Length: 436
Image (cartoon, rainbow, N blue to C red; front, side, top):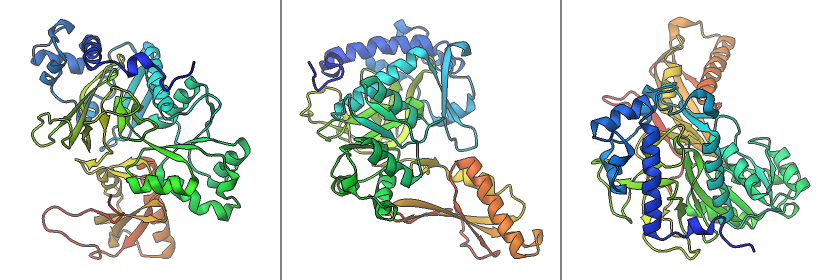
């Protein structure tokens, strides 16, 4: 008999039983973490030399935070707890200095992750018989493959099309009567704006739901998408360091994102002091992955800001829920779902001899899509100023940036002294996109 739960027993555990399960799994993760060169030293410094040294869930707070810098400094295998022959998949995300954040999965880790994603999708009401068109990027990015395998676990029919090529996306939706999408909110808005020019309208489609993520969006954006397409749009949260999607997901009531606490220890801290804050107070999300033993991640500082909702959800799930992501504590930009650090751009433009010492990153929107423009001053002594030479320089900068940040920015060349000069800390980023 079908229920509203993919795994009723786990999803409705009492708080006491849930915390007992977390404690058991935390000890198992500690046992794995001790096998890594990084955590072995870090845990020993705080007196944790075996799983038995963890007496309660609160003991996790004795352990120092893990940061993206830690991952970069221990690249590539410093956080690997098993032999490489036991790893069946590697994912990664971009880093701030060209060194990627690498995540490893064993066969069991992948299975556990897939179960969480399936549980998340099921909570929205998606079922076997739905046609699932996955419009997120595949490859090293966790989003595409994560939702793909979760949807297949439920029994949905998956169309692994990936991103881009709007006309083709629309044709696939029409031909196969797609009912569920996985997509960034900005691209879903763009598709609607482009629909008429490609010879389609919403009456041609059979859409019922969309899983929108990978970039921040407001409640008004969600409501606009639901109105434009006549669908339900569900918010989700995940990041590669913690295995990607399946970390937190809205259920059919769309009243906050359920964090699967049997798989993660959720903390919210004051980003300045590092102290834990009470549920309901805004702070930085800190997460411990309890199910990925090949590549443990303990008390990872996400830099994402949110708060824990304090009321119960009508769906009956007992796992705590997060608010929307309210912002970040660092300077990372999200451009159409892709993480871009200004330091990545600086690293590229500053190594090109024809570029001067000043540049600016400008972010705006064209319709529903983000647009990234990199403005650079030219070094006049390096070339004559011929049009062909200028065009070649623009192409060179664009290609080298795309190789680093995976997206293709517009390039503007300016004469020396044309861009603003700042005393003290330069304002390199100008982001004029509407704020939420």
